[in-house]
Length: 157
Image 1 (cartoon, rainbow, N blue to C red):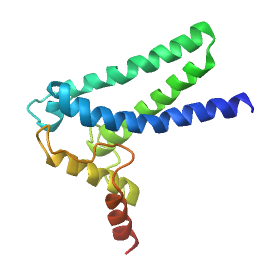
Image 2: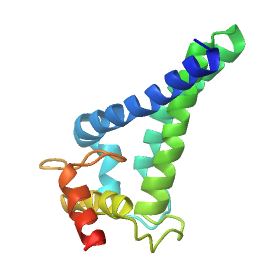
Image 3: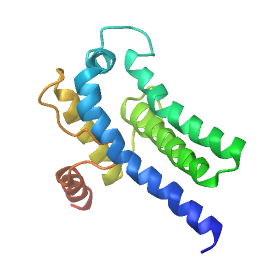
Image 4: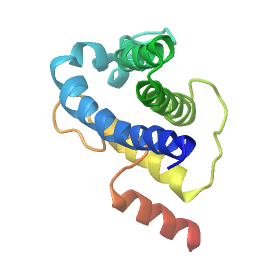
């Protein structure tokens, strides 16, 4: 197998796996042990553009940086491409969650695509729960089918 195919598969697989990691982390860590950092994302009790919740960026970025550094410094390609996959997921998270959903930068406000509407609706349902218990929709790029189906029906009809 060509190296570029192998490393593309490693990167894509890591990106896909990160959705599961993000879901698990969001449900059991952000809404559990580290709720103290995530709470201000559900309760807007501050005027700053930054939130304590933004520290989770470091929790995900540091392993990606370490993988890229190990791959670069020691010539190990697989950790490098794993780090690239995690970094690409982080970039997607920033664009989808912070820019598109929460409008931290006021662009992409009028997207009419059923997929993006479903993502936005599912996240809105997640924020309906202001406490750490009884949450739903912990994913970012993949949410329960009912949101995709309802948005797709609304778009086609």
